[in-house]
Image (tube, rainbow, N blue to C red; front, top):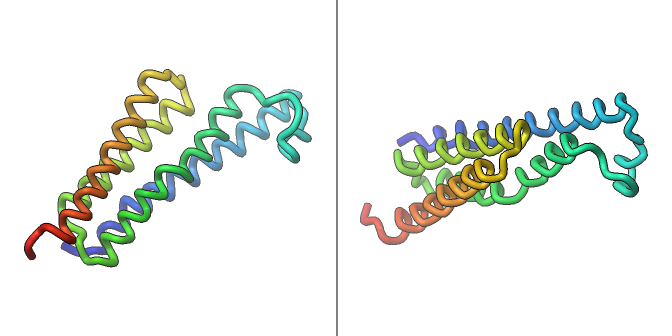
Length: 141
């Protein structure tokens, strides 16, 4: 399989991160236009911004946590030339689960569904790593 195909789900995750960053920025601007003190965003001290701002800000931070392991697995699969249909499919499903998670977080933020989406993404990520180890150490080429 062409290793370069793994770049597509990696790009998907990058685009999701930028999208959430833009949403967070727009929500901050909206809160300031509605009267929230802009100085909070300078030092992050004082009264907290409205919930809709915090949701986007916290989700953006979240996209720099577990997805780091996704990027590492993807880059390793490319570098070790072990991208196969299993790894590529898992990567695609990981990004889909993260889009689902972002959609919930940025809209109704229902905890049960948000948790399900997050847990699913964690399971997919774990399976990606287990497959990466299997394909590199245990699988006979």
